[in-house]
Image (cartoon, rainbow, N blue to C red; front, side, top):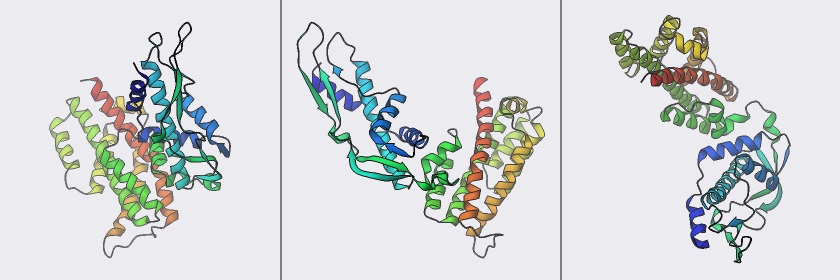
Length: 330
């Protein structure tokens, strides 16, 4: 294969997605040092993901090609994710620029050769100029990192803290809108969108628990009726109450395997209901003439959001267990 064909093959396999950027953000912020030397940390980061910089790409029939292509494209993919993570963290005031010199210093290149022991050939390098993301060569962590509310200003970091990969896209979208509004100091819309996410989470949990019970051939008619009501026009408060009653009444029989798997007891859902009522009451401020017990200000909204992390985890852990048990029995 000619060198230009390999070059195009590497480019074809370069892939960057939000997952990679989130991984990079967490890695960057987990560093113990305040000052971050970009070149050193980038090399450590790509190596930690299994894609260190290739010293020289060997194009010869005696050397496997596919693995080298994967390594080269993987390195560039993670380099881009790292660089974009740095820029986003700077934009959100997580990192401060301490050096105006830009990295990479000499472009983005990978050396290649056709020379192997016993054979002649030629050597050169590929330039991946179109994939360069210029970033400061040195940054330091923001002084506000000591603030407990730090995660609330970055959508990716907040969602990664929730650990709710099994949430419906509409719930994730509502959470994204929640943090976006919070960053813009729009506290009423923040709590409105959080209310949407919380309502969706409770409904999702109820559906999963009911599907588990129905799959066990338990009270099918009654549970199917409740399933329809959860997806119908009944009030938010009604749906939350029904989900809690469902689990509380049957966590020792119907849902015993779920309880054993998660160790989640009814009192934990009751605690989440108290928080949910606070969110619901705050959300109702959108109605004309509505009065709330306290203003939807920064302090109140931040406290509610920080509490949401553990509550979302509990709801979706319970949902995941019920769904997994159903899948195993199919």
